[in-house]
Amino acid sequence: MTPLMLSFVAFIGVTALVGLVAFVLSGPNTKTSDRLDLLTGRKQKDDETTNILKRTAFERDKKSLLEFLTPNLPSLHKIIEQADAHIKPSTLFGIGVVLGVLASSASWMAGVKLYLAPLAGLVMFTIPFAWLLTKRAMRLRKFSGQLSDALELVARALRAGHSLAAGMHVVAEEMPSPIADEFNRVYEEQNLGIPIEDALKGMCERVPNLDLRFFVTSVLIQRQTGGDLAEILDKIGYVIRERFRILGQVKALTAEGRLSGVILIALPFGLFLLMMHIKYDYVEKLWTTDQGIQMSIYALIAQLLGAIIIRKIVNIKV
Image 1 (cartoon, one colour):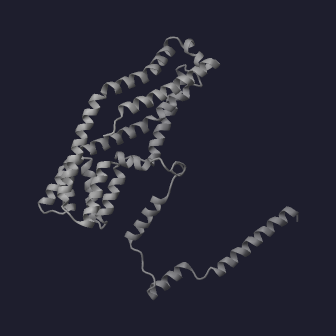
Image 2 (spheres, helix red, strand yellow):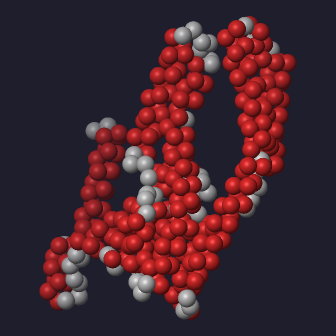
């Protein structure tokens, strides 16, 4: 027998011996131990609800590689939930890849330089994610506009003698989406046995809105210390309406600056695409010569700094 075969046989034998010892020392069978524990009363069978909660907690604790590498960025699952988009992350990523491949192939077949074709693919790849972020922003903006009316409706329900949960159910029945969906989810969760404090905190995680956090914080404090919750909700609703009124005035006064910023930022890129179509060899020097590459880098840095400065000027916190 060769030394290699001898080493292999020895390895198999040692592995089998270790496995046998571990099996002997591991104790009785798990199923037998479970049956004995049930007979002696030391262990009760887990019902279906407990198993569902365990699986849910395990799935919630799992993190993807992207979430592990970027812990400070919001997860894609949370963004999809906030946007109320019924789509899986894998499906969204697959759509982006397909659009990117099609755009790159179409650019290459149209005669675009081979090293420029991936740029078109990259732009098309970001379209599904841009759609998701736009949908999320529109939903959160609509929720903010409905919150003051919802708080007023809850305050009226409290004055009529209803509980807080019943008031939230009134909002779910009388008001449109998205605020009706979120309040109805809180109502259903507390009906299923979840404390209303936890249900409200979950709504704050799903909807990152500062005014909503004021509402939830006031409810939590009122349930611990007491007080007139209806009056508190009226005051919060008044503050929200005043903030929206001032925000509208600020947007009207800064509209010219925001439009000028968009034009100034988009003009160089639009002119670049136009010159590529009219006279390609004229703009080709921007990436084929050392001086052109330096000019392109400085221009992009200047564009980025200009966009940041304009945003700081027109973005006024209210």
